[in-house]
Image (cartoon, rainbow, N blue to C red):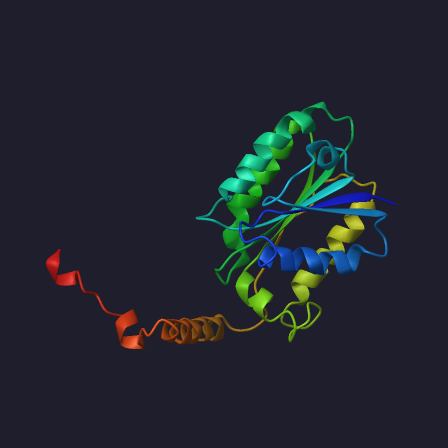
Amino acid sequence: MAKICFINGSPRGKNSASMTFIDELCKITSDTINEIKHFSLNGQLVYEEVATSDAIVIAFPLYVDTLPSSVIEFLEALHPFAKNSTKETKIYAIVNCGFFEGIQTKNAIALIENFCLKTGLIWRFGVGIGAGEFMKSTKDIIPLNSDIKREVYNAFIGISKDILSNKHEAKENFFISPNFPKSEFISEADNSWIEFAKTFSVSKEQLYSTPLKNSL
């Protein structure tokens, strides 16, 4: 049995897609993991406890193709504890983005992998998830093991199994998009922004206005 630390790296805390993915992974791991700890970068962290876990899963959103500043600060603070730990701690990253394509997260995942190489932590693999906010907003009506989200579910099953495995050979990252046409995603996103704008008394025409265009 293993001890695992989940790190919510989203500045939005509990009201985030990152927290949704942590909750979903917890459901999968709860029967096989002996001890589970939750930490948020919005709260207090016990770095000694994080660094001596059997596995760390850090979930965060993509910010301009890289890590949120809070995640960078977390890694900087964790570095000395990880360097001095004798524990062979495995690291997994779950990165979500607003883009449809999960591959957009590849650079952010590569940064977590590089951190592991510098500190001696054992990098396993990352899960890059496209349409993160869609995944969060539909969690109560579209389950993770549905056809639309099944690749995320399978990747989380992979994390759960890998935590308990003694194998350390390299594994490929998962880059996942929802299983429906991108055109539908764009259309729904456009409509949601229009509806959201109405709450601020902004019309669709105003969203497309270019008031400074002729002054440049």
